[in-house]
Length: 154
Image (cartoon, rainbow, N blue to C red; front, side, top):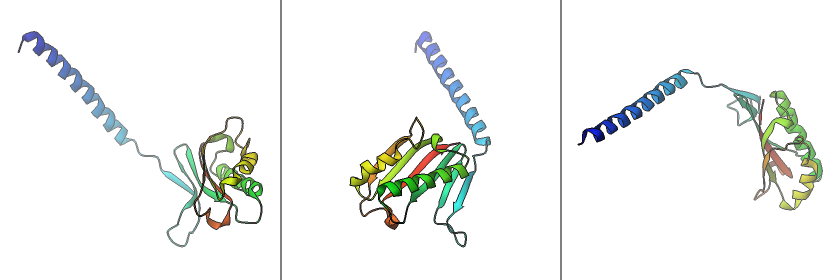
């Protein structure tokens, strides 16, 4: 092998080793930092292992479980009540509707899309979150016309 080529290869391997060494050091430093603890709110069943939580926090994120409305009313009434429940849960966790990043909307019937939007619009401030809306095959559990969950920051 020519000396010039060998020198080039040595420098290349040395630089790769240096980068790898830094990567290992960074990984060790990151590993020594404790992972954030999950905070759970509104446990649904305290007698046994809970089925799910109303919301959880991890770091500066809040994850709110699906909320539905299980009483009489049309899609507008159901949407309004569901949004009120989301807001209550967010406030308990130290967040707000304006800090919501993502919303999932589950409709019992896709024909309710327009009515749901009429009530939904503006509820998250002037910069609304991203959203996914689907009609659920078989309907939303508990006879609710709509269910929503969300992710927010604190």
